[in-house]
Length: 196
Ligand SMILES: [Zn+2]
Image (cartoon, rainbow, N blue to C red; front, side, top):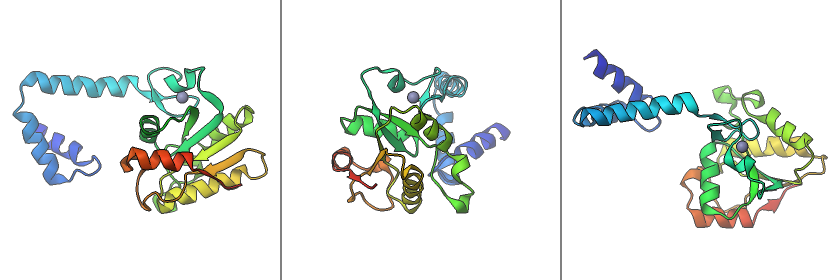
């Protein structure tokens, strides 16, 4: 039973998966042919060994830089700041955005002990110091913490001459960009409003 308990415990740590679902998933997996389990384990190992953060934007990649940062056709004057790498995929799929990104790696949350030092604020400053960025689009999640994070960055950029815009209002409050439909997100990006 030790092996089963271990898997249940690991699965239960995943977001949205409680003890019961973890048990259900574990028994589902045990019913599968052994090769499937081995493939799943191999996929997990590969991700653990290969995937890293892009040194320029924080997006997930397998090399020093992600494909977006390496793409010479992307506009380096536009920088879209998002909380998580999953939001990059969402903006890419849903909109025609052709600029670059900065993945913060979270949101400011004093209650959870997340301050500016736990986010990629330093990387953001480095990007701005390179002098190519003309507009920063704050695309944090429409939640309290996301708003606080956007306001913090907005204040950081005040007086730098860089245009700062935020996704248009109308996104469901408390939501997560990941779960917002593509059309709404695309409109919010197009109708972004300058905030400073
Ligand atoms: Zn990158």
